[in-house]
Image (cartoon, rainbow, N blue to C red; front, top):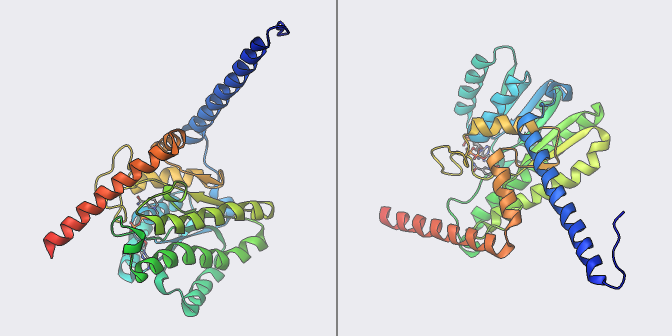
Length: 315
Ligand SMILES: NC(=O)c1ccc[n+]([C@@H]2O[C@H](COP(=O)([O-])OP(=O)(O)OC[C@H]3O[C@@H](n4cnc5c(N)ncnc54)[C@H](OP(=O)(O)O)[C@@H]3O)[C@@H](O)[C@H]2O)c1
């Protein structure tokens, strides 16, 4: 039993401070151990328990293509949805050759015009399949960082349509059958820009913020009904969208990202599955808010300047 001299209240204060400090350190240590376990040791869920098929939007390139391959490797049949028919046919062939035991189907949809007819086409494609997993991956960002007032109306509309409307509409199309079977997993691809303020990508940050909050709320609502909703918040991955050509420790290849991403399905409500992304987010969360904002702002200002210089040279 710890005792202190009542005539010296400062001793009690020191004890309380030491106890609180100890709890904070213990909590950080346990979080660190938990992160190590979930990143490197935790076994992936048996994804086939959600259903026979996975649907992936934006499946012909980057993260979506890599996730389609990873899901097929886990034994799921995959419905690839994307914009360009010829690329869909190529990816379907490539996937069928790599994973001959699974079924692969494709559907060409342009989410910039996801009208009634397009939604009916998706509905029809889903109707004869037991959809266990929906990956709402399709999305766009800025051509380069810019101030909000520099975005054209079409660019802003595209950010909302491709990132927000596609996610909402696809979820509404796939959900009823999942609820009926009381099984399913929905993975929504947001971005670290959904978590942290991201100057000069405000429209993207806001759109992905919607995806994040929608996912978190839906998860609470749907988990008791057997449907797990997860929001993934990656940082940079080497894809066309990010314009990162070469993968590195902090900017993984789509295949490395997808391995980590698929291993997380069914676990966290919100996660940044790749280890170095999780580390960067932890650093961002730990550093003072103003410092993180200043660094992001400065970096995006530099990228904007370089993009404008490049554009003026080529015009
Ligand atoms: N890469 C990153 O660093 C990063 C970081 C954070 C979050 N994310 C998010 O991750 C997701 C995937 O990004 P990514 O980097 O893999 O992108 P990506 O390499 O540019 O691939 C985008 C995919 O979406 C398809 N697509 C584009 N516009 C479409 C439209 N109008 N209708 C239907 N399909 C369309 C593309 O099809 P086509 O082949 O026909 O063009 C392609 O398959 C996005 O939601 C993005 O915001 C990416």
